[in-house]
Amino acid sequence: MVRSFDNVDFKVAEAEYFLERLRSRDCMFPEIDFVLSAYASAARSITLALKAVLADAEGFATWYSEREAKLKSDPLARYFVELRNYTQKTGAQVVNRAGSREKLRELLGRQMRGRGNWFGESGEALPPAPDMEVGEAALVHFQTLLEIVYECYVDFGPVIDPQQHYTPEHYARLGKTVEDAEEELGYPRGWTSLGKNGPEDIPWRFELLRRHAAGAGGLNEIFERYLGKTTPQPAPLPERTLPENEGWSRLQDGSRIWIPKELRKTGTVEGDLTAYIGSLKAAHGAAPAAPSFEEQEFTRLRRFITVAILQIPARCFEVSVAGTKELAIRERIFCYELYHYLRTAFDDAGFRYTLAGELDKGGHPIIRGNVIPDFVVHEPGDMSRNLCVIEVKPLSGQKSGFQKDLVTLTRFVRDYSYYRGALLVFGAHAKGESMIRRRIEREPAELREAGVHVWWVDRAGAPLVELS
Image (cartoon, rainbow, N blue to C red; front, side, top):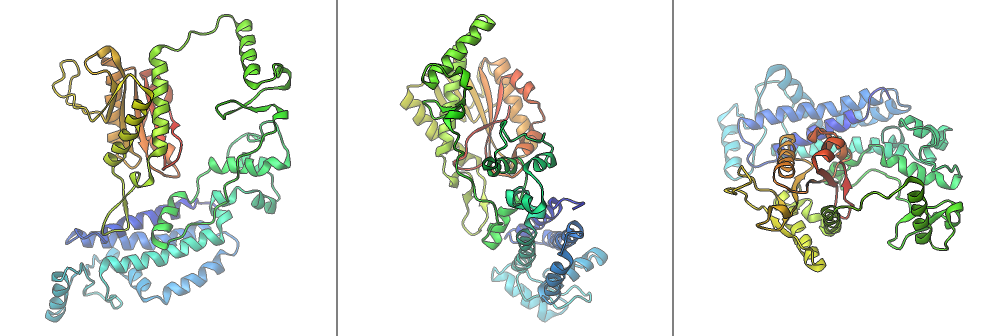
């Protein structure tokens, strides 16, 4: 493909944005005409983008001609195409417009009964308008188009979806190897091999490549919301079993470590590791200084946060709203749940610091400005015992909000004796990490120099990821 299928995904997301605005109860004149025009244009672009992206794909022309015929025989689909043409070329407006007194009485009656916005008469040679509320008509039309895009992911999945493309089965059909896949993604050949090239390792190597590739993850949320289904995806593999006789061993905390055969001398993995570290000390002189007390306490805090986040349920990442199927993102709800689990962890462990939520620093004799951090971990009344200040942001938050929080965190560390600052981002997206980096616009080395950490958790039950 010359063009990326991301072009189609973008147009689907654009049409959905305007669709949900059309279905909102507070979308009234004149906004309703603006949004309907934008929706009709974005919806029309979905199939245009589909044809532009897959024009050279084998079998696509026949595949699409069947679906195009169905669209042409669908009165609602035909109406939205003509509506888009007229609104683009003539500026025609159709919502709640009446060419006769009888039509005006009918439309007003429907609106007064709380039945939303309706298609009226534009005065142009449009096909007959659907006798449906505008938002509901757009929903049915969007679902029709979305079904075509979904079928495309099913029938052309290995061509357009990296999650279906990077599999052993697909590359076997292509006559290619996992090393070819590594090179295709820009990695050195053998990047996933860990020095091994056994055929039994290939499924896990492809799984690692899929983790580093994009895919239908973001669009699957839309498929599930409007169609109740998701695209075919490879089943997750079980944890790879690594034979201990090849050097892989488990530590007491469950983590794994690779120790070469020549260093396995004491009979236990912990003993071998200690002996190896001792040999490095002897070879390179004195060991580095032990971590400071503050660093040890901050490490404990990070462990508490990691465990607390694993306990936050999915309903606190996205909140159900009565009257709509759409889920809302509420930062406060996420913060309150995190506060609960953190306080419990502090109390159970006898952690010496106090956790404060939304502590208003207005009027503080030392800290200037009316700032209210989401969390501070400190000993009240003692500026020498400030461990960490934390700001929380949803992934969907504005760039300006990310920038403002980073300024606050930097000030608290630089000017007010806080040992560390942390920006905690929550929310799922296939390109979440790159989105966060675009919003913060600061290099990891710069953040570390400023004593600021950036953490991300994408969904309930997922581990905390360090981005700085």
